[in-house]
Image (cartoon, rainbow, N blue to C red; front, side, top):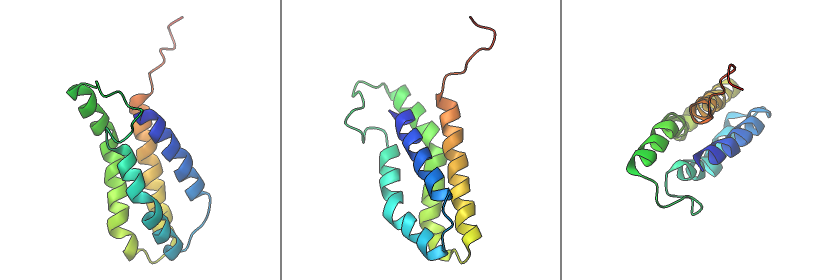
Length: 115
Protein backbone atom coordinates (compact mmCIF):
# COMPACT_ATOMS: atom_id res chain seq x y z
CA UNK A 1 0.00 0.00 0.00
CA UNK A 2 2.93 2.37 0.60
CA UNK A 3 3.78 2.18 -3.09
CA UNK A 4 0.22 3.16 -4.04
CA UNK A 5 0.23 6.09 -1.64
CA UNK A 6 3.60 7.30 -2.91
CA UNK A 7 2.46 7.01 -6.52
CA UNK A 8 -0.66 9.05 -5.72
CA UNK A 9 1.50 11.60 -3.94
CA UNK A 10 3.86 11.74 -6.90
CA UNK A 11 0.95 12.57 -9.23
CA UNK A 12 -0.18 15.27 -6.80
CA UNK A 13 3.28 16.87 -6.49
CA UNK A 14 3.79 16.89 -10.27
CA UNK A 15 0.49 18.76 -10.62
CA UNK A 16 1.60 21.13 -7.87
CA UNK A 17 4.91 21.78 -9.64
CA UNK A 18 3.18 22.44 -12.96
CA UNK A 19 1.68 25.66 -11.65
CA UNK A 20 3.77 28.63 -10.61
CA UNK A 21 2.55 29.83 -7.22
CA UNK A 22 3.10 32.90 -5.15
CA UNK A 23 4.53 32.24 -1.69
CA UNK A 24 1.04 32.81 -0.28
CA UNK A 25 -0.53 30.24 -2.63
CA UNK A 26 2.26 27.75 -1.87
CA UNK A 27 1.68 28.31 1.84
CA UNK A 28 -1.97 27.46 1.28
CA UNK A 29 -1.04 24.21 -0.50
CA UNK A 30 1.04 23.23 2.51
CA UNK A 31 -1.72 24.16 4.95
CA UNK A 32 -4.39 22.35 2.93
CA UNK A 33 -2.52 19.16 2.06
CA UNK A 34 0.58 18.39 4.09
CA UNK A 35 -1.00 17.05 7.27
CA UNK A 36 -3.10 14.64 5.21
CA UNK A 37 -0.03 13.54 3.24
CA UNK A 38 1.87 12.90 6.48
CA UNK A 39 -1.03 10.82 7.82
CA UNK A 40 -1.18 8.88 4.55
CA UNK A 41 2.44 7.79 4.96
CA UNK A 42 2.08 6.50 8.49
CA UNK A 43 1.97 2.72 8.43
CA UNK A 44 -1.35 1.40 9.61
CA UNK A 45 -3.36 4.48 8.67
CA UNK A 46 -4.84 2.76 5.62
CA UNK A 47 -7.65 0.30 6.40
CA UNK A 48 -6.76 -1.61 3.21
CA UNK A 49 -3.36 -2.54 4.66
CA UNK A 50 -2.97 -6.05 5.94
CA UNK A 51 -2.90 -6.02 9.71
CA UNK A 52 -0.64 -9.06 9.75
CA UNK A 53 2.41 -7.06 8.69
CA UNK A 54 5.48 -8.02 10.64
CA UNK A 55 7.45 -5.53 12.67
CA UNK A 56 10.22 -5.82 10.07
CA UNK A 57 7.78 -4.89 7.29
CA UNK A 58 6.48 -1.96 9.28
CA UNK A 59 10.02 -0.76 9.96
CA UNK A 60 10.98 -1.14 6.29
CA UNK A 61 7.94 0.94 5.25
CA UNK A 62 8.80 3.61 7.81
CA UNK A 63 12.42 3.70 6.62
CA UNK A 64 11.32 4.17 3.01
CA UNK A 65 8.81 6.89 3.90
CA UNK A 66 11.16 8.75 6.29
CA UNK A 67 12.82 11.07 3.72
CA UNK A 68 9.42 12.07 2.30
CA UNK A 69 8.05 12.70 5.77
CA UNK A 70 11.10 14.81 6.59
CA UNK A 71 10.55 17.06 3.55
CA UNK A 72 6.83 17.37 4.31
CA UNK A 73 7.57 18.38 7.90
CA UNK A 74 10.25 20.80 6.72
CA UNK A 75 7.67 22.42 4.44
CA UNK A 76 5.22 22.75 7.33
CA UNK A 77 7.90 24.43 9.40
CA UNK A 78 9.34 26.74 6.75
CA UNK A 79 6.43 27.68 4.47
CA UNK A 80 5.67 30.78 6.53
CA UNK A 81 9.18 32.05 5.70
CA UNK A 82 8.95 31.69 1.91
CA UNK A 83 9.15 35.11 0.30
CA UNK A 84 9.71 34.17 -3.33
CA UNK A 85 8.20 31.82 -5.88
CA UNK A 86 11.53 30.06 -6.25
CA UNK A 87 11.70 29.11 -2.58
CA UNK A 88 8.38 27.31 -2.69
CA UNK A 89 9.09 25.73 -6.07
CA UNK A 90 12.47 24.52 -4.80
CA UNK A 91 10.73 22.94 -1.83
CA UNK A 92 8.13 21.22 -4.02
CA UNK A 93 10.96 19.98 -6.28
CA UNK A 94 12.77 18.61 -3.23
CA UNK A 95 9.58 16.79 -2.23
CA UNK A 96 9.21 15.35 -5.74
CA UNK A 97 12.79 14.02 -5.57
CA UNK A 98 12.16 12.48 -2.15
CA UNK A 99 9.02 10.74 -3.43
CA UNK A 100 10.83 9.46 -6.52
CA UNK A 101 13.67 8.17 -4.36
CA UNK A 102 11.24 6.34 -2.08
CA UNK A 103 9.51 4.76 -5.06
CA UNK A 104 12.86 3.61 -6.43
CA UNK A 105 13.46 1.74 -3.18
CA UNK A 106 10.10 -0.03 -3.48
CA UNK A 107 9.82 -0.91 -7.13
CA UNK A 108 11.31 -4.26 -7.99
CA UNK A 109 14.57 -4.12 -9.82
CA UNK A 110 14.39 -5.59 -13.29
CA UNK A 111 17.37 -7.70 -14.26
CA UNK A 112 18.12 -6.96 -17.93
CA UNK A 113 19.78 -10.39 -18.24
CA UNK A 114 16.78 -12.39 -17.04
CA UNK A 115 14.30 -13.99 -19.44
